[in-house]
Length: 73
Image 1 (tube, one colour):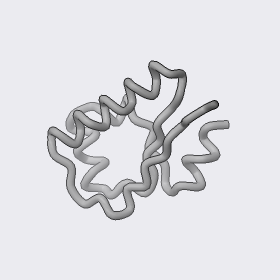
Image 2 (cartoon, helix red, strand yellow):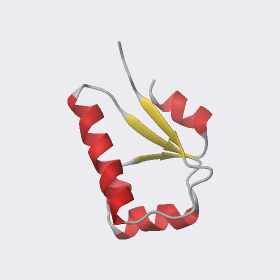
Image 3 (cartoon, one colour):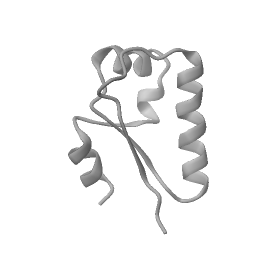
């Protein structure tokens, strides 16, 4: 059964290197099983952290949970 994941980041204000590494690990683990990870409601601070580390190219970031869910198609 598909196990695509949406992370609702509404309450996430900051992320450190360990958090970024965890997001990468989760992305890789899901991808290895043929599943996808989507980020929803990501603050500008977190988006900036993704941009500075070039992870914005790897992560799928969406305005809200509904948009993230639609992106699975």
